[in-house]
Amino acid sequence: AQSVTQLDSHVSVSEGTPVLLRCNYSSSYSPSLFWYVQHPNKGLQLLLKYTSAATLVKGINGFEAEFKKSETSFHLTKPSAHMSDAAEYFCVVSDSDDYKLSFGAGTTVTVRA
Amino acid sequence: NAGVTQTPKFQVLKTGQSMTLQCAQDMNHEYMSWYRQDPGMGLRLIHYSVGAGITDQGEVPNGYNVSRSTTEDFPLRLLSAAPSQTSVYFCASSTKRTNTGELFFGEGSRLTVL
Image 1 (spheres, one colour):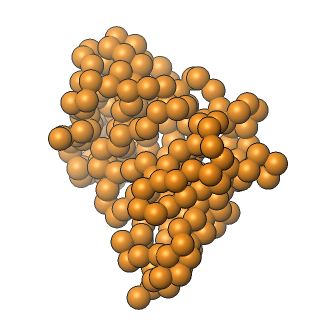
Image 2 (cartoon, one colour):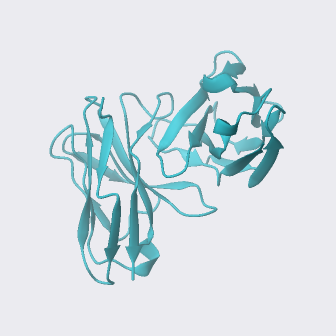
């Protein structure tokens, strides 16, 4: 069985400071891991994905995430937050071929001017 | 590029009414799915389809029906609406298996059941 836990329901940062969104996963197999972003009243958009290649994954808009198997983590970071990063972020895991993804509960990011 | 289009964007129903949420994609994707989003619960899979004529249940299928008569369209039917079905519904599609491919989402349909 697969599952994902996002450790923070809400993160508030100042513009220009680093952003860290934490995600731990549980998987019986070698997982695929994703981060999606949802801006207000919009659908979800893929930020980045890990599918057993390089453990440090770079995504769009300056985000990156590191897959750490020993810690079962896939934390999302960005060196410098921008006002446009205010959104909800979802960590997603899939460890099988049965078309079923498991979404985390989401982390809402607020960026202060 | 239209991508994934959902209609309607907003709907209010009374308990016991039925309705259909429409989803269409113009990317020739084989895989299509419906999710519901509730506060603090992320997205939960309702039904999915891996091609025309093929559908299967997800995590929370009760109270919903789907069909896939064409590659482009994947409607979600609420048979007898209940207040517990108040939610935001997202349709998503992909050209690959979801454990490696990117899901493309519609902008959502916000349903309130009174």
